[in-house]
Length: 131
View 1 (cartoon, rainbow, N blue to C red):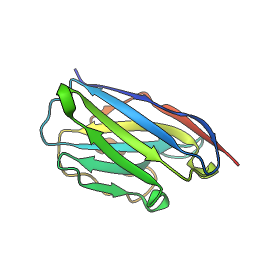
View 2 (view 1 turned 45 degrees about the vertical axis):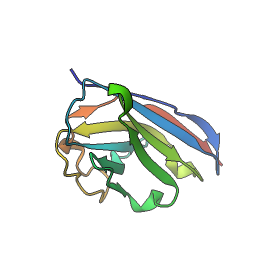
View 3 (view 1 turned 90 degrees about the vertical axis):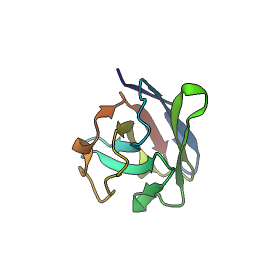
View 4 (view 1 turned 120 degrees about the horizontal axis):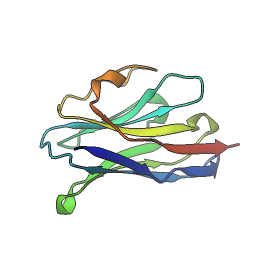
């Protein structure tokens, strides 16, 4: 049974940094795509960054140069990270990790796009950025 558990959210001031983690258990696929999504109140869920099983990454335009997605597959555990720097109030949202057993990562092209392309989701971790 696949389980994704996010952590690392919190409250920071504008310009600050946070590092989100997503611990993936039971996820034994050798070829896959994993992603970070976010959802602000009253808005659709938005894909933020993706990474595949060979570490190819992509980012939505609004976070390029500020966020970095990475993963660690050491010691039979799989952890997904999102390093967020230069945070802005508009980054405030619930952040979710997601995974799919398909190495083709859907493009990040807008709100509500590709959310049904992922098979597994975490419960989310809240990020709040104050001005």
